[in-house]
Image (cartoon, rainbow, N blue to C red):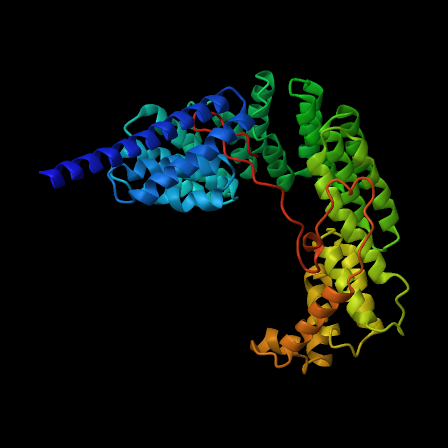
Length: 482
């Protein structure tokens, strides 16, 4: 009797422990959802973090309990709202297989949002597809819209259009405009654009619509950009971003138009964080057109102005990486002659930084060509030519022929042609060691001193660290991703 009583008390204690833990997790999740619905996303992060901890604790002690799928749903949802989609997805996708639609369907929606946040539209369309047969009309409508949107983001425009015409979701018109533009049906897309402007729909994927129009007819994209700006029904910050995007698209074909667009964007965004985006766009314009390191000083001067723009912390982070990379490129190339020790290595590292961290493809091609001409006997000359093939597509055939003719014994050529380059790793290790020991450090400017760039953000061959991924929106709210 005593043992039975003790066992019963233990079970009661454990049950109370679960009940309290899940009660608090549910309560905190409700607080987080309310904060998101009220537009207070930053306030939702605190409760979401506590939800994740409490749900995980309950699962650790009772991983096979009948309520475990709900605990996993709470945990995965909290992680996704905190922007931790990489860890949230395995949890959410395990819950999607649950027999109870009350947990499987919210998990599918959250997983779809996470896939979109991770730039995986195909995975998102699969997740949203689980909801198309939901018994709840509201879930089906939302799933149909999200599924169509994911198809559009994945470039499957015909399928997206078919889905989006079946839903009355308020975001469907903007998505249809983008899908029509992707199909080259520009007149139909323009008609929808007019209705979106009349409704002052700032949540439509405007940048995506114009980008798809530009892929078919750049002149029409610029014309529509003018029409949207002149209508004046959208927020100025959004209009400024559309002008920035149009200016960046115009760089290669018309630098005068590009400069005019950026000037328009600047006037619309004075003393706002978007003005910092204009600065970065001007820097990108300089770098895309640069074919000499003489542009570095001009780039550094432009980046200095980021320090004086309010609310531009993310732009300053990007500027910090650009600043550090630009200074390293300049230092690597400075005073390099044919007689410079390891001059070929310095040029190759500078070219990698120019291409990968600065987005200066022309400058990278110029430096690689210089390496090939001035150091034809360098073991890195064939590596430079391989890199040039992707940067100079018009010269690709002649470069390939010269590569086979002059460097057939190179480990780099052997690796590409035969899949086996003896000595390849020795050369790569040598290049890496030089980069680690000799890579010059740049002195940060005012714009880059807060926060300071980390060395690994601008390491040779590495791309700049991406901006933090925003948490996906809560289920009932229309997403604003482009």
